Amino acid sequence: MAQVQIIYGSNSGNTQMVCKFVTAFLQEHGHEVVMTRGEHYPENQLTGHDLLILACSTYEHGELEDHFRYSFWPRIQKLDLAGQKAVVIGLGDSKYDTDYNIESGRILAKYIETHNGELIHENLMINRCPLSQLETKVQAWVASLNKKI
Image 1 (cartoon, rainbow, N blue to C red):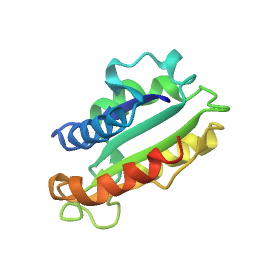
Image 2 (image 1 turned 180 degrees about the horizontal axis):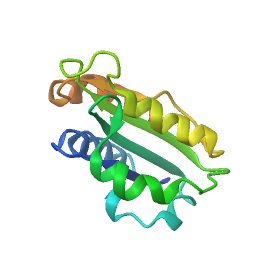
Image 3 (image 1 turned 60 degrees about the vertical axis):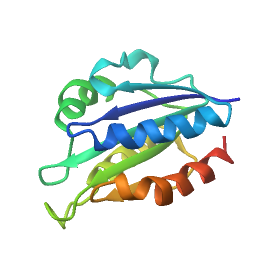
Image 4 (image 1 turned 45 degrees about the vertical axis):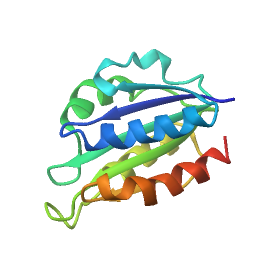
């Protein structure tokens, strides 16, 4: 089966919770999944996986979560993702900002596209607390993704 690398940024734990759910689902379907916080991930290993999942929450007015933005993000800006299949998970909460809600998903997708990666599935975009969406929206998304890897 596929080797999947999930790299995420999470401050409150919501993105981490979604990534753990996605990890468990993919592992149950035979995939090897490694989940790592962005600030702990070595940038020279971003490619070479069957699937790369970048996941991050949105903070302030359309910014990536701070640990991801300040520690991981600058280190990967010059990387070429040519041939790397990828998907994106973005979280946000419209109660904080309706104009830039879930902007993290758009930022990550743009990064993959402008660095020659291949987005193979629609973004998973989650508004508000993801807990009530794990068994519905998130499960449907990862089940659909599983058919493509």
